[in-house]
Amino acid sequence: MEFYSFEHGRWRGSVEWDHSMHFIPRQPCSKHGPRSGGRAGHLRIILPSARVADFVWTWYSECLLAARAVRVLQHERLKGFRLRTVAVTQLKNGRYGPAPELEELVVTGWAGQSPGASGITLEEYCRECGYTHYSAPTHPEHLIEESQWDGSDFFIVWPMPGHIFVTERVLQVATANNLKGAAFVPVSEMRHLADGFTPGSLEHYFSPQVVRRRKADVDYLKWEH
Ligand SMILES: [Zn+2]
Image 1 (cartoon, helix red, strand yellow):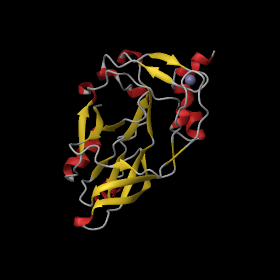
Image 2 (tube, protein in one colour):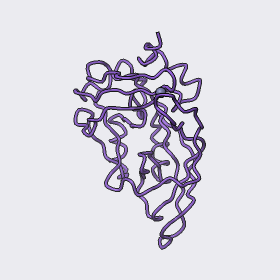
Image 3 (spheres, protein in one colour):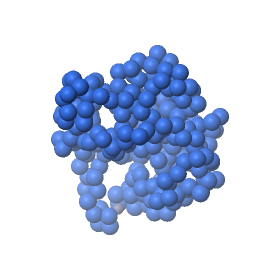
Image 4 (spheres, helix red, strand yellow):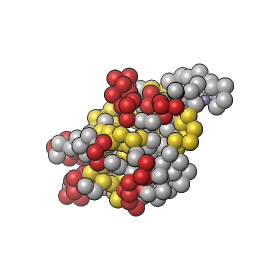
């Protein structure tokens, strides 16, 4: 099975978060200082122009879908995502009409933790605040272990919760429907991973029910003992 990293196309970073975004407050850590919690509520964004591609990416790499992309993904019954409303609070250039409706692609698919063969190892875990740091993969071709993959077309792998992975079917659907604004990079060819990952803990990304299901799949909790 071939998997792809689903990434921004050429137009990354033109969409900013609005200043009125809410974050979950967290206690500062005695070792790591003030730590920001996850996002609370819907995305609120500043859009440069009403002319957008089918896939739109924020500066922080959230993937937004324009109406046609939503229709295609739903019609093709691709699995492993849900949609969350996005509020466009400001349209910088109104020349091309009103702000388009956008939905955030929230990935629900899961492929557990990247196996040891990828070269990713846990280097630090803080019991107090949940800070985690993992080394960079030395063998990206082993990032995903198929036996841990839940079969979703869109999925994530720990410790890269902000990164979207997709199946070949997503690439086929996007190509057949000429959906623009995303790049599909074969997992074995992924670059720019040299700094490793600092994802924090599962609680920063998932609801309590999902965290309970996924806890057994990740290794940092074993450091508790
Ligand atoms: Zn800490």
